[in-house]
Length: 309
Image (cartoon, rainbow, N blue to C red; front, top):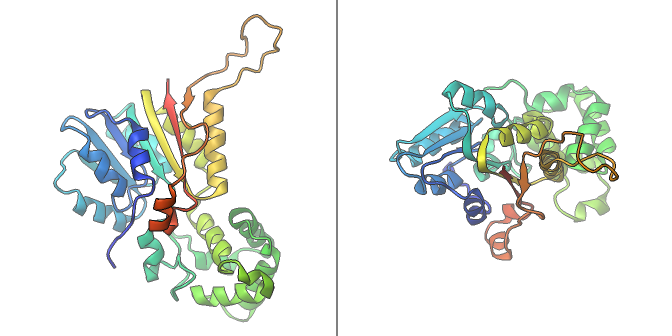
Protein backbone atom coordinates (compact mmCIF):
# COMPACT_ATOMS: atom_id res chain seq x y z
CA UNK A 1 0.00 0.00 0.00
CA UNK A 2 1.22 3.51 -0.81
CA UNK A 3 2.02 5.61 2.25
CA UNK A 4 -0.54 8.37 1.77
CA UNK A 5 -0.88 10.75 4.69
CA UNK A 6 -2.34 14.23 4.26
CA UNK A 7 -0.61 16.59 6.71
CA UNK A 8 -3.10 18.28 9.03
CA UNK A 9 -3.06 22.05 9.61
CA UNK A 10 -0.01 22.32 7.33
CA UNK A 11 -0.02 26.07 6.67
CA UNK A 12 -0.79 26.84 10.32
CA UNK A 13 2.12 24.66 11.49
CA UNK A 14 4.61 26.26 9.08
CA UNK A 15 3.53 29.76 10.15
CA UNK A 16 3.57 28.70 13.80
CA UNK A 17 7.16 27.43 13.67
CA UNK A 18 8.44 30.82 12.40
CA UNK A 19 11.19 29.02 10.51
CA UNK A 20 14.74 30.44 10.53
CA UNK A 21 16.38 29.23 7.31
CA UNK A 22 19.63 28.44 9.16
CA UNK A 23 17.94 26.84 12.17
CA UNK A 24 17.65 23.29 13.50
CA UNK A 25 14.15 21.79 13.52
CA UNK A 26 12.70 18.51 14.76
CA UNK A 27 9.71 16.70 13.34
CA UNK A 28 9.13 14.31 16.23
CA UNK A 29 6.45 12.36 14.38
CA UNK A 30 7.78 12.37 10.84
CA UNK A 31 5.33 9.90 9.30
CA UNK A 32 5.31 10.16 5.51
CA UNK A 33 7.12 13.54 5.67
CA UNK A 34 4.04 15.65 4.91
CA UNK A 35 5.05 18.42 7.31
CA UNK A 36 8.79 17.69 7.01
CA UNK A 37 8.87 18.37 3.25
CA UNK A 38 7.52 21.86 3.81
CA UNK A 39 9.94 22.54 6.68
CA UNK A 40 13.04 21.41 4.74
CA UNK A 41 12.05 23.54 1.72
CA UNK A 42 12.39 26.61 3.93
CA UNK A 43 15.85 25.70 5.27
CA UNK A 44 19.19 26.64 3.72
CA UNK A 45 22.09 24.18 3.49
CA UNK A 46 23.21 25.50 6.89
CA UNK A 47 19.90 24.49 8.45
CA UNK A 48 19.02 21.00 9.65
CA UNK A 49 15.92 18.86 10.01
CA UNK A 50 15.82 15.92 12.42
CA UNK A 51 13.00 13.50 11.60
CA UNK A 52 11.97 11.02 14.29
CA UNK A 53 9.39 8.25 14.00
CA UNK A 54 8.77 4.99 15.84
CA UNK A 55 7.41 3.43 12.64
CA UNK A 56 10.34 2.13 10.55
CA UNK A 57 8.17 1.84 7.43
CA UNK A 58 7.12 5.49 7.71
CA UNK A 59 10.73 6.56 8.20
CA UNK A 60 11.86 4.65 5.10
CA UNK A 61 9.13 6.32 3.02
CA UNK A 62 10.11 9.76 4.37
CA UNK A 63 13.78 9.16 3.51
CA UNK A 64 12.88 8.11 -0.02
CA UNK A 65 10.64 11.15 -0.54
CA UNK A 66 13.28 13.56 0.76
CA UNK A 67 16.40 11.92 -0.69
CA UNK A 68 17.45 15.08 -2.56
CA UNK A 69 17.92 16.92 0.75
CA UNK A 70 21.27 16.24 2.43
CA UNK A 71 20.64 18.17 5.65
CA UNK A 72 18.12 15.71 7.15
CA UNK A 73 18.78 13.14 9.87
CA UNK A 74 16.37 10.19 10.12
CA UNK A 75 16.02 8.65 13.57
CA UNK A 76 14.04 5.52 14.45
CA UNK A 77 12.74 6.38 17.90
CA UNK A 78 9.95 7.91 19.92
CA UNK A 79 9.20 11.59 20.39
CA UNK A 80 9.38 10.86 24.13
CA UNK A 81 13.13 10.33 23.60
CA UNK A 82 13.96 13.68 21.96
CA UNK A 83 16.25 14.74 24.80
CA UNK A 84 18.30 11.53 24.58
CA UNK A 85 18.38 11.73 20.76
CA UNK A 86 19.79 15.27 20.84
CA UNK A 87 22.39 14.19 23.40
CA UNK A 88 23.55 11.44 21.02
CA UNK A 89 23.67 13.94 18.13
CA UNK A 90 25.58 16.37 20.41
CA UNK A 91 23.00 19.11 19.80
CA UNK A 92 22.18 21.33 22.76
CA UNK A 93 19.20 23.43 21.59
CA UNK A 94 16.95 23.66 18.53
CA UNK A 95 14.86 26.37 16.87
CA UNK A 96 11.60 24.48 16.63
CA UNK A 97 9.84 21.20 17.31
CA UNK A 98 6.69 19.72 15.76
CA UNK A 99 4.69 16.87 17.29
CA UNK A 100 1.74 15.59 15.24
CA UNK A 101 0.16 13.06 17.60
CA UNK A 102 -2.28 11.54 15.13
CA UNK A 103 -2.19 8.07 13.62
CA UNK A 104 -1.32 8.29 9.92
CA UNK A 105 -3.84 7.37 7.25
CA UNK A 106 -1.39 4.70 6.07
CA UNK A 107 -1.30 3.02 9.48
CA UNK A 108 -5.09 3.01 9.71
CA UNK A 109 -5.58 1.75 6.16
CA UNK A 110 -2.78 -0.84 6.19
CA UNK A 111 -4.71 -4.04 6.88
CA UNK A 112 -1.87 -5.91 8.58
CA UNK A 113 -1.38 -3.22 11.23
CA UNK A 114 -4.73 -3.92 12.89
CA UNK A 115 -5.68 -0.31 13.62
CA UNK A 116 -8.95 -0.33 11.70
CA UNK A 117 -12.27 -1.69 12.96
CA UNK A 118 -13.41 -1.85 9.31
CA UNK A 119 -10.77 -4.32 8.09
CA UNK A 120 -10.21 -7.91 9.23
CA UNK A 121 -6.66 -8.47 10.45
CA UNK A 122 -4.63 -9.69 13.40
CA UNK A 123 -4.97 -7.64 16.58
CA UNK A 124 -1.74 -5.65 16.48
CA UNK A 125 -2.02 -1.81 16.63
CA UNK A 126 1.74 -1.27 17.16
CA UNK A 127 3.15 1.93 15.66
CA UNK A 128 6.60 0.46 16.31
CA UNK A 129 6.50 -3.13 15.06
CA UNK A 130 9.71 -3.92 16.99
CA UNK A 131 7.98 -3.56 20.36
CA UNK A 132 6.51 -6.62 22.07
CA UNK A 133 3.18 -5.31 23.42
CA UNK A 134 0.29 -5.80 20.97
CA UNK A 135 -3.48 -5.30 21.04
CA UNK A 136 -3.84 -9.09 21.09
CA UNK A 137 -1.90 -9.25 24.36
CA UNK A 138 -3.95 -6.42 25.90
CA UNK A 139 -7.30 -7.95 24.89
CA UNK A 140 -6.44 -11.50 25.95
CA UNK A 141 -4.42 -11.00 29.15
CA UNK A 142 -5.48 -7.79 30.92
CA UNK A 143 -7.83 -8.29 33.86
CA UNK A 144 -11.43 -7.19 33.37
CA UNK A 145 -11.16 -4.15 35.64
CA UNK A 146 -7.99 -2.90 33.95
CA UNK A 147 -9.55 -3.36 30.50
CA UNK A 148 -12.67 -1.48 31.56
CA UNK A 149 -10.63 1.40 32.97
CA UNK A 150 -8.54 1.71 29.79
CA UNK A 151 -11.62 1.68 27.55
CA UNK A 152 -13.32 4.29 29.75
CA UNK A 153 -10.33 6.62 30.25
CA UNK A 154 -8.70 6.44 26.81
CA UNK A 155 -11.82 5.85 24.74
CA UNK A 156 -14.32 7.81 26.85
CA UNK A 157 -16.67 4.87 26.27
CA UNK A 158 -19.64 4.84 28.64
CA UNK A 159 -20.23 1.11 28.03
CA UNK A 160 -16.65 0.23 29.03
CA UNK A 161 -17.64 -2.18 31.82
CA UNK A 162 -20.06 -4.11 29.59
CA UNK A 163 -17.45 -4.32 26.81
CA UNK A 164 -14.69 -5.52 29.16
CA UNK A 165 -17.01 -8.14 30.66
CA UNK A 166 -18.04 -9.43 27.22
CA UNK A 167 -14.38 -9.61 26.11
CA UNK A 168 -13.49 -11.68 29.18
CA UNK A 169 -16.45 -14.01 28.62
CA UNK A 170 -15.39 -14.69 25.03
CA UNK A 171 -11.70 -15.24 25.75
CA UNK A 172 -12.58 -17.91 28.32
CA UNK A 173 -13.85 -20.00 25.39
CA UNK A 174 -11.12 -19.08 22.90
CA UNK A 175 -8.40 -16.48 22.38
CA UNK A 176 -9.53 -13.36 20.51
CA UNK A 177 -7.35 -13.20 17.39
CA UNK A 178 -8.68 -10.64 14.91
CA UNK A 179 -10.06 -7.11 14.68
CA UNK A 180 -13.47 -8.17 13.39
CA UNK A 181 -13.79 -10.76 16.17
CA UNK A 182 -13.32 -7.91 18.62
CA UNK A 183 -15.77 -5.71 16.72
CA UNK A 184 -18.50 -8.37 16.99
CA UNK A 185 -17.90 -8.72 20.74
CA UNK A 186 -18.16 -4.94 21.21
CA UNK A 187 -21.41 -4.86 19.21
CA UNK A 188 -22.88 -7.52 21.48
CA UNK A 189 -21.98 -5.46 24.57
CA UNK A 190 -23.50 -2.15 23.41
CA UNK A 191 -27.29 -1.54 23.46
CA UNK A 192 -28.81 -1.30 19.98
CA UNK A 193 -29.95 2.31 20.44
CA UNK A 194 -26.34 3.43 21.01
CA UNK A 195 -25.15 1.88 17.75
CA UNK A 196 -26.94 4.57 15.77
CA UNK A 197 -24.30 7.26 16.45
CA UNK A 198 -20.99 6.29 14.83
CA UNK A 199 -19.30 2.91 14.71
CA UNK A 200 -19.74 1.04 18.02
CA UNK A 201 -16.08 -0.12 18.08
CA UNK A 202 -14.46 3.26 17.40
CA UNK A 203 -13.88 4.33 21.01
CA UNK A 204 -12.67 0.92 22.18
CA UNK A 205 -10.20 0.60 19.30
CA UNK A 206 -8.89 4.09 20.08
CA UNK A 207 -8.42 3.16 23.73
CA UNK A 208 -6.56 -0.08 22.96
CA UNK A 209 -4.32 1.73 20.46
CA UNK A 210 -3.43 4.38 23.04
CA UNK A 211 -2.60 1.68 25.60
CA UNK A 212 -0.47 -0.37 23.18
CA UNK A 213 1.57 2.68 22.12
CA UNK A 214 1.66 4.43 25.51
CA UNK A 215 0.45 7.65 23.91
CA UNK A 216 -0.80 9.59 26.95
CA UNK A 217 1.24 8.80 30.06
CA UNK A 218 4.63 10.34 29.04
CA UNK A 219 3.14 13.27 27.10
CA UNK A 220 3.15 15.92 29.86
CA UNK A 221 6.84 15.28 30.61
CA UNK A 222 7.68 15.19 26.89
CA UNK A 223 6.14 18.63 26.31
CA UNK A 224 8.17 20.17 29.14
CA UNK A 225 11.36 18.52 27.86
CA UNK A 226 10.70 19.88 24.36
CA UNK A 227 10.31 23.40 25.75
CA UNK A 228 13.56 23.00 27.66
CA UNK A 229 15.36 22.03 24.42
CA UNK A 230 14.27 25.15 22.51
CA UNK A 231 16.52 28.14 21.87
CA UNK A 232 15.20 31.58 22.90
CA UNK A 233 12.26 32.46 20.60
CA UNK A 234 12.10 28.82 19.54
CA UNK A 235 8.64 27.42 18.86
CA UNK A 236 6.91 24.18 19.84
CA UNK A 237 3.89 23.16 17.74
CA UNK A 238 1.75 20.23 18.90
CA UNK A 239 -1.25 18.78 17.07
CA UNK A 240 -3.57 16.63 19.18
CA UNK A 241 -6.58 14.54 18.15
CA UNK A 242 -7.91 13.41 21.52
CA UNK A 243 -9.15 15.30 24.58
CA UNK A 244 -6.67 13.54 26.91
CA UNK A 245 -3.74 14.49 24.67
CA UNK A 246 -4.95 18.07 24.42
CA UNK A 247 -5.44 18.28 28.18
CA UNK A 248 -1.87 17.08 28.84
CA UNK A 249 -0.41 19.59 26.36
CA UNK A 250 -2.52 22.44 27.72
CA UNK A 251 -1.47 21.66 31.32
CA UNK A 252 2.23 21.43 30.40
CA UNK A 253 2.07 24.75 28.53
CA UNK A 254 0.36 26.42 31.47
CA UNK A 255 2.92 25.08 33.94
CA UNK A 256 5.76 26.19 31.65
CA UNK A 257 4.42 29.75 31.62
CA UNK A 258 4.53 29.72 35.42
CA UNK A 259 2.17 31.38 37.84
CA UNK A 260 3.24 33.31 40.92
CA UNK A 261 1.79 31.80 44.12
CA UNK A 262 2.82 34.61 46.47
CA UNK A 263 0.17 36.46 48.53
CA UNK A 264 -1.06 39.56 46.71
CA UNK A 265 -0.05 41.84 49.58
CA UNK A 266 3.67 41.12 49.07
CA UNK A 267 5.44 43.90 47.13
CA UNK A 268 7.54 41.42 45.07
CA UNK A 269 7.69 37.72 44.20
CA UNK A 270 9.46 35.38 46.60
CA UNK A 271 8.21 32.01 45.27
CA UNK A 272 10.85 32.05 42.49
CA UNK A 273 8.43 30.84 39.84
CA UNK A 274 10.25 29.86 36.64
CA UNK A 275 8.73 31.31 33.48
CA UNK A 276 9.92 29.39 30.40
CA UNK A 277 7.91 31.17 27.73
CA UNK A 278 4.55 32.23 26.39
CA UNK A 279 1.55 30.39 24.99
CA UNK A 280 1.04 31.78 21.48
CA UNK A 281 -2.36 30.17 20.99
CA UNK A 282 -4.70 31.27 23.76
CA UNK A 283 -7.26 29.03 22.06
CA UNK A 284 -6.19 26.07 19.94
CA UNK A 285 -6.10 26.45 16.16
CA UNK A 286 -8.54 24.09 14.46
CA UNK A 287 -8.90 23.13 10.78
CA UNK A 288 -10.99 25.27 8.46
CA UNK A 289 -14.29 23.90 7.21
CA UNK A 290 -12.61 23.38 3.82
CA UNK A 291 -9.86 21.22 5.34
CA UNK A 292 -12.39 19.19 7.33
CA UNK A 293 -14.33 18.48 4.15
CA UNK A 294 -11.20 17.53 2.18
CA UNK A 295 -9.64 15.46 4.99
CA UNK A 296 -12.17 13.95 7.38
CA UNK A 297 -9.40 12.77 9.72
CA UNK A 298 -8.54 16.39 10.50
CA UNK A 299 -11.89 17.07 12.19
CA UNK A 300 -10.74 16.60 15.79
CA UNK A 301 -7.29 18.20 15.32
CA UNK A 302 -6.13 21.01 17.61
CA UNK A 303 -2.86 22.93 17.27
CA UNK A 304 -1.26 24.59 20.29
CA UNK A 305 1.90 26.71 19.98
CA UNK A 306 4.43 27.70 22.67
CA UNK A 307 7.36 30.12 22.36
CA UNK A 308 10.47 29.93 24.57
CA UNK A 309 11.72 33.14 26.13
